[in-house]
Length: 459
Image (cartoon, rainbow, N blue to C red; front, side, top):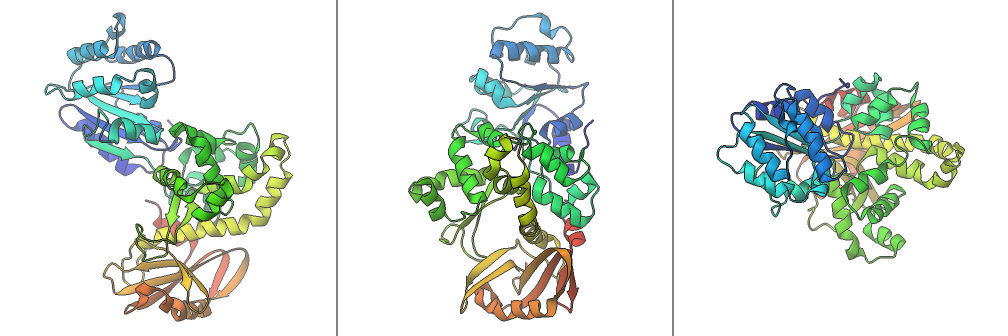
C-alpha cells in the first residue's frame, strides 16, 4: 500500500458512511494527485466493495470491465450480457445485498461515454428498497460539481457525504520527506501540499535534483502539470492558463491582467472566479474589508507548486525543451530566498488561528496594506475571537544567519498599527515569525519559528 499521511477526518466519515444501515451516496472530488484513490482503497473492504477506476473507452467496454469487477463479489455476474446501464443496475439491485458498496473512481469518464448514467443511477438511489451504497469520485472538480453538486444535476441532493479532498497542510511534509522544519518550509515552497509530489520528490537525494528531473526536464512527470490540471477541469483551459501565468509573473491586479491580455476587465471576472473555486488562485483584500465590496483586490496563486512553476519553469520553456537548464536554475538560485520567504509569509498567516498568543484564540489572518503618511504594509493581521485585541505581525526569512532586533520591529508595528481601521479601541499584540537563518535580539510580544508553525500545521 502507498505511503499515507493524515486524512483521519476523511477516513472516519467514509467508514461511518459504509457502516450505516441501508443504501446511500457519497461523493469525493478534488484536484489530481491529492490521494483520493488511495484514500478509497484504504477504507473499502474488498470482501464487500467493488472498486472500479473508469477510463476513456466507449461505454460497452467500460461496462464489460465493471462487470468483471462486480463478479469478484457477485460470482457469475459477468456471464450475462447487458444492453445498457439501466439493464445492468436492475440486475445489480436484484442480486446485491445491504453490505454491497460500488465505488466508481473517475466517474466523469463514465459519464462522458454514457451521459444517461447519472439519471439512471438517480432512479435506483431513489428507490425505497435500495440497499446498495455508491461512492462517486473524480478529479475534474467542475464536472463533479456539475454532475452531482449543482442544483440542476440529476444526483443533486442525493449524497449524504460530500468530501472535497484538498492538498495536505504543510506540517505533514516534514514527516513525509524526513526534513527538519526549516528544510520543510523550503520544500513546501516548491511542492506545496500535494502528496503525490512528495512521493516523487522523496526518491531523490536533494530538492534540486528532484526539481531538475521531475519539473525542468521536458520528460519529467511534472513538466506540464499545470496544463494537465486545467484540462482535467474544463475545455477553456488556455485562457485560464494564460491568466495563471500572468499572475505567477507578478500581475496581481485585474487591470494589469486585462492590459496584458488585451481584454476588458469585466470579461476576466468569471475566469478568475473559476480559478478561485478550483483552489489555484486566491483573491486577497486588506484585512477588515468586505470581500463583496472591496475594490482593492490582488489575485495571487494559491498553490506553492504553481507559484514555482510559473516563475521558474514557464519563462524558460524554449531552453528547457532543448535540454538547457542553466537559465532556469540560475533564476531559481537568485530568487530562491524571496520565493521561500513568500511561502513563509503564507504559512505564518495560516498558523495564526491554531496558535495561543497572549492567552487568546485568533481568527483567520490576512495582510493589510494602505497609507499613513506613505505606503504601509503588515504581513499578518488578525482579530482575537473576543474582539478586544488586534494581532499585527512581521515575517522574516533569510538563508544566511542573521540576528534581527525584534524590539525595533515591535515598536514599528505598534507605531503604524493605527493606520489599520480595525485597530481603533483595541489592544495591539505584536508577533514576529522568524525563519531560515534568522534569530532574535530583544523581545517582541511573541516570537514564532518554523518548528512552531510546522507543528501547528499538522492537521
